[in-house]
Length: 480
Image (cartoon, rainbow, N blue to C red):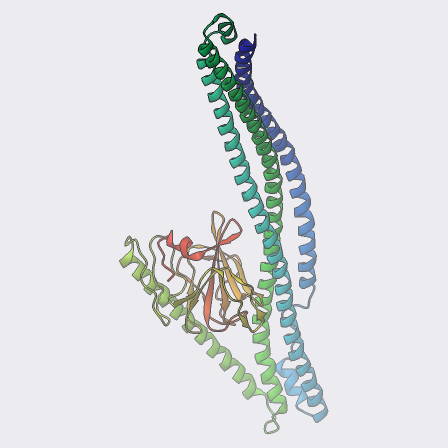
C-alpha cells in the first residue's frame, strides 16, 4: 500500500496545485472586485469631502485677498493738486496725502506678492505629497506584479513535477517490491520510492510557495489600490492648490500693473506740488500724458519685436521640418532653435545645467536643494523665452523665492512645462490665455534662486517632474 499511497499523494498534490491556484486566483479576483467596489465608493466620498474642504480653505484665502482695497485707489485729481498749490498749508497737506498713497500702493503690491508666494508654497507642499504617493503606488504595483509572477511560476513548477512523477510511477511499485525476489531489483525499487518521496516533498513545498506568493500578491494589490486612492486624493488637492496659487499670482500681476500706472501720476503730482517755480500744474499733467504715450509706443515696439521673432522662428521651422533633429543652440537673442514636430526649444541660449542631483546653490533667496528639477539654458537678460508647445497658461507671475517669476503651460494629456526666473516685467502672458508653439511668453531674467540670467525649464507628466532632456529628445528637440 505504500507505493500506491505515494502515487495517490502525487495525484493529490497535482490536483491541489491546479485547483488551489485556480481557487486562489478566483479568490484574488473576487477580493480585487470587492476592494475595487469598496474603494470606488470610498474614493468618491473622499474626493467629494476633499474638494469641498480644500476648496473652502482656498476660497477663504482668495476671499481675504479679494477683500483688500480695489486696485484703483481714490487718487487726487489734477484739479485737487492745482487747488492745493494756492497756499502753503494746503500744499503740505496734499504732499503728505500723496506720499502716504504711494506707500500704500507699494504695501498693497507687496501684500499680493506675499499672498501669491504663500499659496504657491501650499501648492508645492501638496505636489510633493502627491509625488511621494505616486512613487509608493508605482512601487507597490510593481511588487504585486512580481509576486503574482512568482506564484504563477511556482504553480507551473509544481504541476510539472507532479505530472512527471505520475508518468514515471508506472505500476503499483509496493506490490512489485513484494513479488520481485531479486535483491538488486528490490534495492532499485526502494531507491525509486525514496526519490518519489523526495519529489513529493519538493512538490508540496512548491505548492506552498505558490500559495504564499499568491497571498502576498493579493495583499500587495490591496495596498496598491489604497495607495492609488491616496494618490488621486492628493492629486486633486494639488490641483486645487495650484488653481488658488495661479489666481493669487494673477491678482498680484494686476495689482502691480495698476500700481505702476498710478504711481506715475502720483509722482508727477508730487513733483508739481514741490515745484515752487510755477503756479500751474499743466506742464506736469502734460508730462504724464507724454510719458504714457511713450510707454504705449515702447510696448507696441516690444510686441512687434516679439512678433518678428515668432515669424522668424516659424520660417525656420518650415525649412527644417521633418529633418528629425534639432538645430544646435546658439547665443544671443534671435529666433529660437527649432525642433521637429510641434515641440520646440524654449530658448536659443546655452545649456548650462541638467536635471538631477547637484551641489546646492546659494543666491538671492537662500540656498537651493540638492535636486535640480529642470534644465537651465543661459541667455542674455531680456531675451525671449518661447512656449515649447501649444497650450493654455495655467500660471503667470511671481511664484516663490525659488522660481521667482514663472509661467506654466498645460499642453493637454497630463503634460505641462514651466519657465522660471523670468525678469520683472517680463511675463507677457496671462492666466487662461491660449498660446501657440514657439510664441514668446516671457523674457529671460534672474529672479528667485538664480545667479545669472537664464530660463529654468521643467517638464511635468501627470503631476510629476521628469528629465527635460529625454522628454524633449523624444519629441525631436535637442536641449544641449
